[in-house]
Image (cartoon, rainbow over all chains, first blue to last red; front, side, top):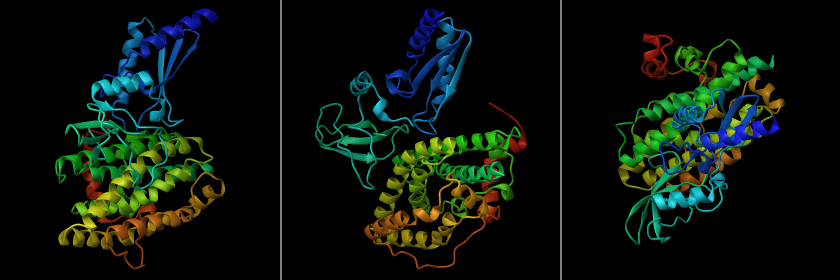
Length: 164
Length: 251
């Protein structure tokens, strides 16, 4: 029994880990740290996810895609639950996730998430040319988790995945 | 008797977040520039996300089967418990910025303190909201400085906005019997403990913005008890239209 539930959990995790963030499709929910846990009780699989930001509009979509991915893996008895604690942080972003972001043209979070001073600024490197001579154009970008920057060296605008 | 107090406390937090979130969403399609439209939309989304989590919890505490939609869309103005500040109209951009600054300068340390609550659900919601409120405060502070230390016209408008909204700031620091009981239990935050940090944000940002801090004056009050300005009814008429026209409709 232990073996078969371990196998089921591995199968469920592998299926769940393939679901991508609908807004940054280069990242899987496993890369992001949104996929927290897969539990097995008998023949029922419970997948636990956590939102990045309180109002992240992708959560419902991620739930639907998780359900589809698990069913496609032959898992019928499933439950998806959302937890808020511990609060999601960019520190959970995997190294693989950071590499993928950079290759996609989004600057990965610079350093560890920590309490920022009121006017604190992070040093952000341009994902194209690597220069740190960059400026922030807007605190909020096309999604909650990004801000908009411009590189003064190569003059390209780019998104930055904010430390959070 | 803890459940009714906890319900009221949670509902007040939810109503503040929802009403301010809705106000900000009214800027969509009208913001002064595209980046700012995205910013206001993002802040609104954070606030409405916080409201959803709080309403879901309030409904569970109440135990009468009301879900987040029923609490948001099926109550009238007199049943809303938000402070008067958040229902004030958007006005010009300076009014929106000043309102956001006053609110966020309080709410950021508030969430940080509530993250230590003995109530695990409130603590979890607060720990997420605190990180978001840090961005909201920084965004509002930067705009207030840009407007205050900008042109003659932007300075005048920023000062007018601050003067107009100042009397709504006091309600954030009020407590009543409901809260005092929860504060004593380590569930709620004593707003008086947040005043030094709020004061520091006011002093630092207003100095850099070259804006004068309005003189201490009589403070508006009533929203937390359901006595609202006329603006809330108009806001609800638009926000609740669909659920009023088609009660119970779902996606």
